[in-house]
Image (cartoon, rainbow, N blue to C red):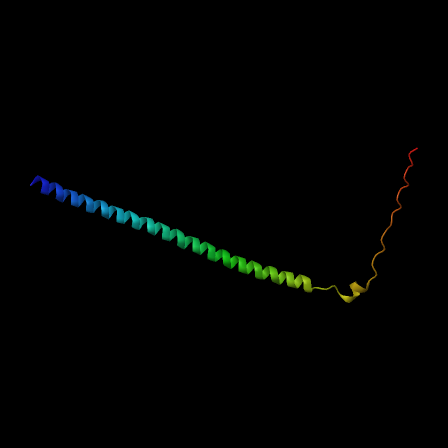
Amino acid sequence: MARLILAVIGVVLLAIAALALVWLLGQLLVGLGAFVVGTAAVLWRLLGFLILAGALGGLVYFLASAWRPSARVAAAPAPETVRLKKPARKVKA
């Protein structure tokens, strides 16, 4: 009879340990899922920011390269360059 009682207690303890391991595995998977969902949300927002920044940067580049000074300013003569005389070199004897 003692062996039967010990066998039943062993089966119950084994079932409790197996249920604890299944619960722990579930907790780990929930944590991993929360991490993956959080990472995906951060990367999605980063992608949106990069698309917006690229579009605005391209628009600014296009507008800056398309701008031309008015004809009046473009027709003005270029300022004369000032040429400085080079100092005479001393000849070593």
